[in-house]
Amino acid sequence: MGNRILEENREERYDRILSNHLGLTYNEIGALEWTLDTNESKDGHIYSYLLKFSDDCPNNAIKKVNGIDDNNVVELGVGEYDTLFEQLK
Image 1 (cartoon, rainbow, N blue to C red):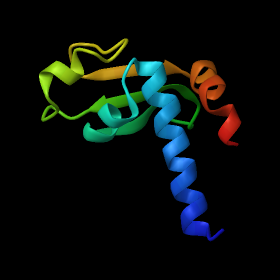
Image 2 (cartoon, rainbow, N blue to C red; image 1 turned 90 degrees about the horizontal axis):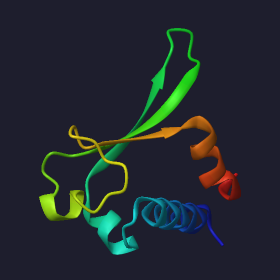
Image 3 (spheres, rainbow, N blue to C red; image 1 turned 180 degrees about the vertical axis):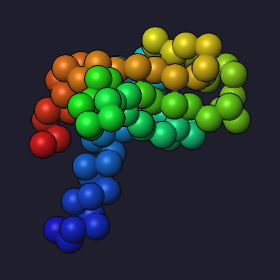
């Protein structure tokens, strides 16, 4: 299997894990625009991960996201994030 196919498979597994955790379907997470950022100290110590959903996302889809705040952000603790994605390492 080529590297591109392996990477696509890994991305799909990542999206499936994340969508399940957020209470969405795989298709729903794929239709939303979001970025992953970190909340970290000046020396690079990561406190948490921030999933930031675009303001352009449909409101009915955003309302379904578990743990989303008024700024369209879901914060995942480092341990929570690591536990979710440890199988992808």
